[in-house]
Amino acid sequence: MQITLSCPVFSSFRVQQVAGMFDVPLAEKAERVLSFEKPPDGGVIGCIVGPSGSGKSSIARHLFGNDYYTGNDWDHGVAVIDNFDAGLSIKEITQMLTLVGFSSPPSWIKPYSVLSNGEKFRCDLARSLSRGGLVVFDEYTSVVDRNVAKIASAALAKAMRSNRIDCRFVAVTCHYDILDWLEPDWVLDTSAGTVSCGTSGALKKNGVLKSPCPSFVASVLFGRCLRRIII
Image 1 (cartoon, rainbow, N blue to C red):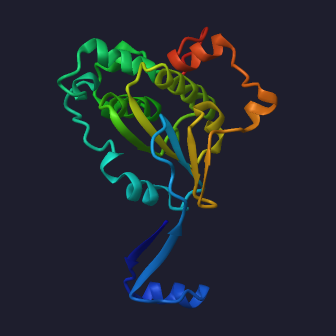
Image 2 (image 1 turned 45 degrees about the vertical axis):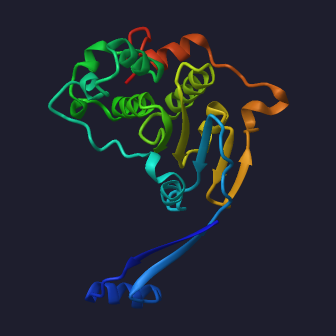
């Protein structure tokens, strides 16, 4: 598949200077063609991964435009839990927040705007998943610690494959380190434009997926750590 991206180029003195300094050809618009394989239909979890600027978001919007989660419509005048769909029970909301590793009732009743970046990520993830159907989540784990990202991905994969979360999920990320933990059914790597099915990274060498220490999982997912708070 191919998509063409374009944007206007506005001429100015500074633009002309940069063009002359770095031998940048000027035209009325800049164009870029992205070539990539189409991912397979179906599957519970998919992933679009690649370096920053490689076209991940553009490809995701092209393939799954209607299901692309933006997360920019939070009402900052009410509690986090009141931003979920009205048809959901409080039990369903709190279970979803807990499944994504945000098990802090005092924070559930705060407005979204005062939360940390990590907490906001979990709230966005929980709310997007609670809507069901197909969820395409951009900048997946970009704002959280890498250990948290891995453990959260493992927890999400387990919850989805055990049908505790009833939807399909596509992660859009620049981080390759979560693939062995998320275990997607397919991966579209935008650095090469190729699709592979399943994952077979370092954690699965010799047919063994190493499990982290249970106490470490609990500390990362639920913030339970002796004499320390994990945010």
